[in-house]
Length: 110
Image (tube, rainbow, N blue to C red):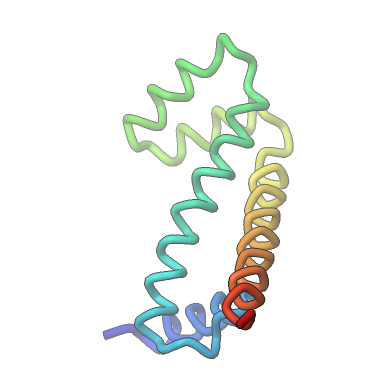
């Protein structure tokens, strides 16, 4: 069972993605799938700004799972990495919405 805060967050994300009219279970599935895609897009966007010789170091830090060390590394090596990640996620939201519209339009054609 989700907490009221999780319910609110899910509802806000569903509204942003344009899927609020779907059943809750389907919303949660789509949000989970979208989250994976958005995280990959954000990571690739940030890693793409890393100097090639720093990518191995980033990979090792990420593998270790130390979020503080990863953040400190990115703060030092990729100034503005938060904005880069946010922009990548925003782009994925736009793509998702465009896909939803295209999917709806395709479904309405006899």
